[in-house]
Length: 144
Image (cartoon, rainbow, N blue to C red; front, top):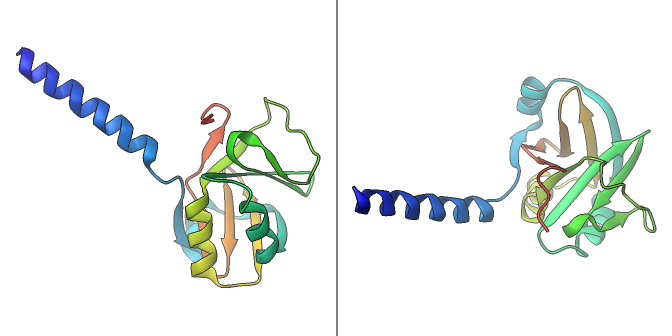
């Protein structure tokens, strides 16, 4: 019994470590995303090159929010990448993706424009025929 408990605890610890290293986000076709997540309610378009320049300033995470048809983009620890000089209140919820997933989306989409999209109940990022979703809300899931 004692060895079973130890094995179970080790498995739990290992799975927690693996989850912490898991990439945040999943890429769908744009058609799948429309079917799964519904209509885009608000969007913000920016050049893919501009987004690439911004996310070079962060190591692991990219966070997004749309407010009043304006984009807010942050990096690790909620550091503001766009618009420069802005402040984000600690209660304002951003959607978190792994930087690697955003780069993968751009590589798959291969278009000059990235669209940040607020849907009825979720936030997505689209490039070409591909859409990134399955993000984490920050807060409460903010990694420091």
